[in-house]
Length: 273
Figure 1 (cartoon, rainbow, N blue to C red):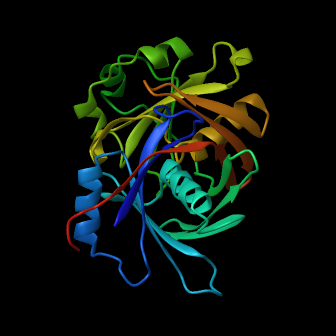
Figure 2 (spheres, rainbow, N blue to C red; figure 1 turned 90 degrees about the vertical axis):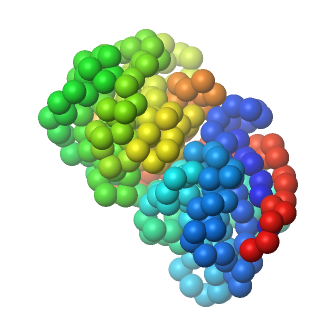
């Protein structure tokens, strides 16, 4: 079983968000427990497992994502990593259609190596600030929004970019604050640097203290900031230690996420099935 590690939402190795990618034959898909154990061994925020589907259907490949602790409904960066592997190995070309828990997703490769994902836009529902959230973050939220069933995050607006970058939150409290994680965000301090807003994502509930770059969260950040800026095309910087840029285009109930990817490790799992 071949496993590749791909850095995503970047064009340079050792930055962006790394994901594991395992391309399987349709007749050799391991049982769920083994997929989870492999993801735990890879020990990245997500490992993607994909295999081809019969021709003529609504999708070309089946796709699932596992954190070290659990399977998730939606993952942007591991989808980008999977599409990158399929294109760079010649297993796919043009637009790839994936069948996943959250529906049909597409990934389109561009001549410069970037890939655009077509994901469902997350519904945003304003919520009161949960008790204890401000203390856990060490910052006072300006607003809080729920992101719906497939994502399950809280998007928390903070006062400025410096506050987002300086956070050192209480992860034990954040683990109880939402179904998946807490995404903090603020407008960019200097948009001339090439991004319109910043974010950070904390997901201790699913085994990820801080995710380097969370593609799926940008399906909520895109409509959130589009409403404030009055523009449908924006660029987000996820200000983790590794950092990464996500170019977003809001198209109603769909959000396009564009970024680069680099394969950094190509190896083989040596144990049996």
